[in-house]
Image (cartoon, rainbow, N blue to C red; front, side):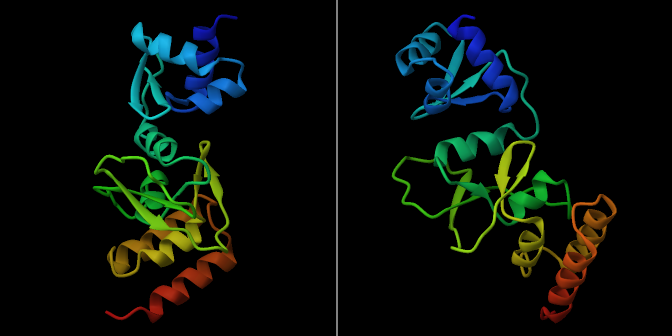
Amino acid sequence: MTYRQTLRWLAFDRHGIITTQQAAAAGVPAVEVRKLATRGALTRVGHGVYRMDEAPTTALTPYAQALALVGHGAYLADESVLAVHDLALVNPRKIKVATTRRVRAALPPTIELVPAEGGDHVEHVDGLPTMPLRDALIACQGRVMRERLVEATRAAAARDLLDAQDVADVLDQLGKAPG
């Protein structure tokens, strides 16, 4: 298999986004990734992050790109989790990414870094790490209308994204919210 075929295989599995670390783990040296970008097979979107133009973009591609730009240990947070699940009718202007480490890379204005809490557990949605949906619904209080959060909680339960205990906990927390 050629380097380009290997990267294509990786890109199709990662919403079209590839990092040089992922490529190296698959046996493609970083220098070959840069060569392929120079030849037009890849588009550089940030330091060590590339988009393969042959791979189809999805609604999750911007989220995968944001996570790759922030780097290892990053996960989606708050409204971005609701958007990935298509809940609460949210369409955030900025993708919220949580991380525990310092990020020195220049990030586009569409990415907002938020501090990760030490006890956060990470779930995965189509290969993208996210904060638990239960925690995201509670964290969005005050930024998303309560009615939308209640409706999103019930919709998540209907889609088996939350169990009965989580639904009860979220609705209880939303009921205590002012306003």
